[in-house]
Structures are given as structure tokens and as C-alpha cells.
Amino acid sequence: MEPEEEAKLTPLTGGVSSDLWQVSLPGRTLCVKGALARLKVEHEWLAPLSRNRVEYEWLQFAGTVAPKNVPQVLAYDEQDGLFVMEFLPLQDYPVWKDQLLAGQVRPAAAYEVGDLVGRLHAASTKDLSIQRLFSTDDNFDALRIEPYFRVTAGANPDLGDRIDELAAVTAGTHLAVVHGDVSPKNILLGPNGPVLLDAECGWFGDPAFDVAFCLNHLLLKAIILPEHTAQLHLSAHLLMEGYARHINWEPATKLMSRVAALLPLLALARVDGASPVEYLTPLQRGRVRDQARFQLSRPASDIEQLVNDWILTARTAVVDRTQIKERTP
Image 1 (cartoon, rainbow, N blue to C red):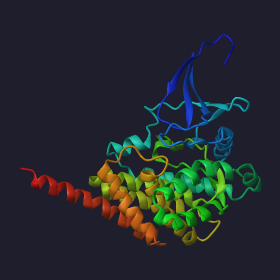
Image 2: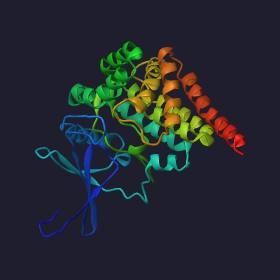
Image 3: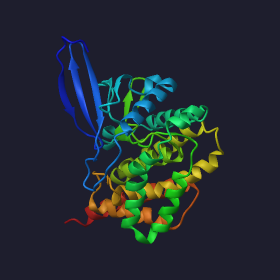
Image 4: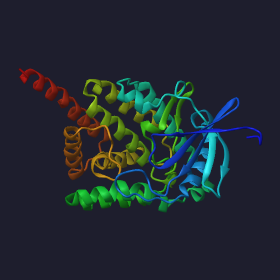
């Protein structure tokens, strides 16, 4: 930005963990991001401001692996905890979550997301300096273990031992750089494939977390979009297929068994954790809770069967809806 340039700042909405501004300058538009000490959710959720630096470092790393699939970082102010990146207009980069909620389910997009996440994970296992750079266990604990594992365990004390076990395995596994928030709300579907945003949770840890986190969102969408269960089912499988082709740091069966263990916990966390999803009705929340609790109480390592069971649960919503319609005078 030149001294004589006048900037117009427009706050952007949608996130809960950071402040975002669209900065309009003559001939160009930028985006500025700064982390919040307290996240904008009902439950008190505090997190270290250092995660802004973590996201900046993650974007720098990912830009060397997949430069077309992350926004370009233009400047960083460590003292004020801000960084500047290119602004990607929604007309060219629609949000995947918005498309899914509108019933626009493109299984090919899920494959591309899985492929991207797999490429990033595989690349991060080859550089020992990356492990030191993303030794951010405290950040990940504050941003993921506490709100998703411990808060959920507090709401489901009978499953506390199982959830504590999952937390210990996740926190104790250090194999690849994890994004930590691979959610459709953080994925833009651009002309050159998916663009991954919001890497505040970046951490050298368990890559199974990213896979389970994204799979969970696809399965939750099936609960609210039962008429699209076939496409969402295919999307889930293609996500795993696109990802699995890059697993070369451990046996794929071992990683996917951890995905299967995490999946029901993450589903339960989105109704009973610190950051529940906003689009489920009370009936749907109950459906998710029942299915997640059932699967958590009977741990299974077969990810294919878990996904199939979730889709079957979603399809029963079609039956329920039809029965209600038939009984309406």
C-alpha cells in the first residue's frame, strides 16, 4: 500500500475465531486477518493469539506444495498479530458449505479436497524442520482437544473414559502437519480446484484428525439433506479415495482406523461441544447424538461401515418425513 492510497475497510462476517476485513484500494482488494482472544461462541472459549502466526506459517508451507490451493500471503505483522492475503471474490470462489446447504452436492469436489489434504500431509512428513515449526500442542489443545473432546465428555459423562482415550491418542500422535479445521466453511471451490482457508489450528500431529473432521461435515449434511444422501455418500467415499492415494508415512489401515474412532466423537461434539453447528433442528440434533453415542459406545475400526451406518441413519429421515406427510389430514 502506497502512502497516498486511501483504503476502505469492510468487516467480513462468518468466522468465530478472528476478525476479518476486506480492504479496498485503487485497483485491488486485499483481506486482513487478526485472531481473537475469545471466540464468538456461546460457551466461553479462549485461545492463544499466537495462532495467527501459526496460520501465517501454515499458508507459507502450503503455498510451496499447492500454490493454487491456498490464498497468497502478502504481508505479516507479528507485533500486532495480523497478516494480509489476497482477497478471493465469492463469485469466482464459492464457499463449499454454502453449495452443500443449497443442495448442490458435487462428489468430484470432495475427491479434490481429499487429494489436496493428502498432498499437504505427505509433503509435511518429509521435512524435519516442519515438525519443529508446528510444535503447537498447546494451541491445538486449546482449539480442538478442550472444546471438542473435553467439553463433549462433560456433557456425556458415561462416555468420558472413551473420549479421554481418544483425546490421548490424538494429542500423542505426531506424524504430519494438520490443518485442524478442514470444514466446508473453510473451503472455496475455485477455478483451479479447492482453496483451503483458516489454518489457525495448524499442528504437527495426527493427520487422521483432518480426514475425520471433513468427513464428519459431509455426514452431518446428509442428516439435513436426506434427499441427497446418495451424492453425499459418494462424496464421503471419494474424499477418502482422493486422500488415501497419498498415504506413505504409515499403513493406510492404521490411519483410517483412527479416522473411524474419531468420527462419532466429532459428530457428537457438533451437538454437545463448545461449537455446535447452527443448521440442525432439535430433532436432527437428537438423531446425531443418538447415532454418535451408539458408535462411541461400540468402537469400530471399519470406516466404510461407519459411513454406511450414518447414511442409513440419514435416509430414515426421508421415511420419517414421508410418514408425517401421509398422516397429515
